[in-house]
Length: 402
Image (cartoon, rainbow, N blue to C red; front, side, top):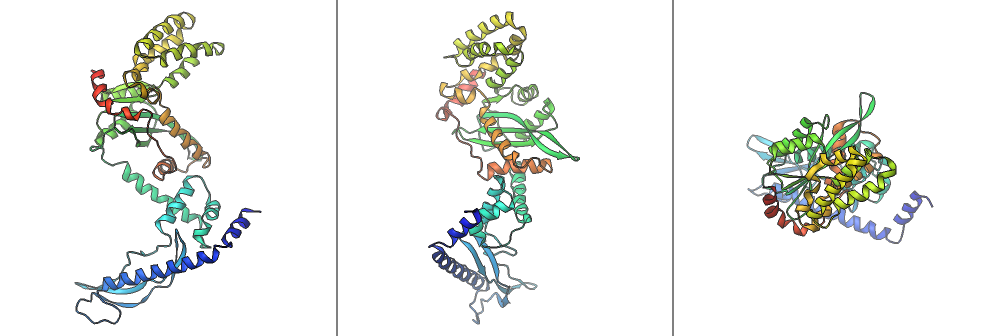
């Protein structure tokens, strides 16, 4: 059985008659609300002569089909003229605004389908019970998607003075964008903040010209301008520009290096046949029982690999003590603070959605989609591991930083 036949069969099932009656009741209910609204606005019932009257009726608009979460209903909106100090003006219904053809919940469903990668045909198929034959062009989905832009512009200037984020994850990804008839990958900077309750919030999402010091400085400066206070810890992938920017704006913030990214860097300087041995020695550093044991393993690693492969030892020295920063915090949180996996997981979800798009017509279109995936609830961010120990971060981290 084809998808279309299956859906038709469901709609013609034993509940079809019941649904038709429910929609008829809803239609009548909406129509009654619209009539009550205009009577309240006028201050008088039809043909009633009272001094409190604030206007008068003059016909009605053509019947309008509106898609709601309960199906399509046909509503007739009355027309009226309202008295003003200079004459009269046309009455505007608040329940059924001008040009409304879909309820906000239907628009939300359309937007969710778009964000998950469905094309217009798939959207119409998925929402067939709600649209009930109502025509929907490609422009409908596009107009609904444009609403993300307004939300995005409002979000990116939201003040952060009243909020507290004790941990930041900062990393970059690349987004395929069509520029001058060619698809290129542009760098996108992403910042996630962790609240004292352990929740993760998206704080920044921006296109950067490069991953240089100046580029990341702009991202951090923007957060400072919005009022973000210095976090206790910033977890990064080792980008020199990002580290320099953090030192400049938040010198008291501890910096933690992603242990996974550093392992990949070490492997790049090591012969393939020695990768397993290198990983075993490296794991002794990042999976130690405590900071003291980790420092001993760190020294042993440098002594051994400094002889076998000096470039590997130099690469580890580049990370320095920042590789062990997570040991300064409660052990239950080490898994969350050891790597930037929390933000890398978000990148994976972004990339999976981007595959259905192939490339974006502009940089803004790409940012709006990525933002919409989170704002629309398609991607949900859970609390970090060990979030119950977040209460200890403020009281312990600053002392350790000193």
